[in-house]
Length: 474
Image 1: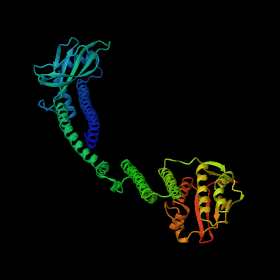
Image 2: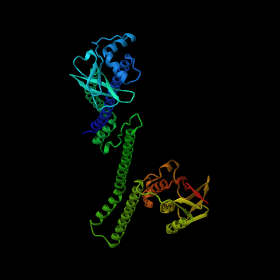
Image 3: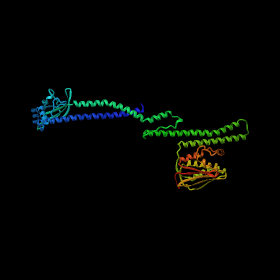
Image 4: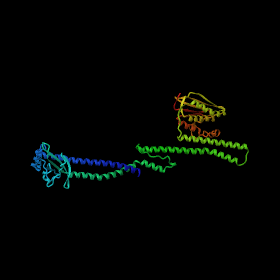
């Protein structure tokens, strides 16, 4: 069963139960109201009959008076006195009967003819009940007549037909029985239509999912106008598609970058080895070419490691372990590792007064950032120059600045240096062995730690990288 049919069925079933309870309550209420109206009419008739005989209280004198006077005569006297003239052939006539304590009929109205009203000797007080009267039903009241000593001398029984009331109740029952299935069926059809319209976003999701491919990941669900649960469902699925598209684009970018960057060194290694096997050569030449191939393979290994590292950070699977730390020991540790590279170029790494204090960062990520920036500074600086590391504050925030006095970066290219595999010019990569991924990793790590990184540079004068930490106390 489809979702719309289940929704319509559940809603219709619940409504049917509720309507059945309501209709039953209405029927019972009408039934009680009808019989209450009949009982009030019977009370009124009893009062009239007793008042016609000038009865003040139901005692033995009143029983004898009713017996002697005759019920028809008493009723006619009161009708003339109250100007309420009725015919015996009324649609709903009243029947009155007087019986003694043993149940023997003492007197009755003429409209009863040879018939008698039911007498219930087990009822000692005033009782209302419904009995059969030939082929019809009667509503009766049985009133005991007692003497001054409290002894019951007889009973006054008054009855009215319930034919009109039964017709009303029967018509009401037929209306309910006929209208109930029609209402339920109509409600099911309308509910199914409304449910189908309500779950249209779900059907759009199904249709889109059935036709979606890698080339159509940019498609999105049209959100409904009302911000209800279906709106949230559509928005959530759209957000999921955004993440899937982003992940696919990263994977696609990683594959393209890796294939592009690995193509050249592989071609170089393959070409070199092809040349070596064409004819015998001396040992020195073999050693030189093999060493060259090993350098290219090492470069490829570093490139793969950097690509995997960048992909892991961009996938969101790695979260920084932020803690309050002192940056001074970290700077000394990074400088110690970069020193051999600087010494080889007769360069000096100077750390000026570190007053940065404690900052909030991930030690491992921050160390990788500083190492990448410092190694780039040494690579692209001339021999005999220096690299300076300054720590301080700017606008109340901790700032660490790394400055070199190398070849610098053109101003129009400053915004692109953090893109993966971007190189200011190809000659730099060929001479330094760079892959163009170092600053991309730095930028990603900075974003993960909410560290703001900026760069300023002048060609042939040097470059400065500024790391501004989000919080920190001296």
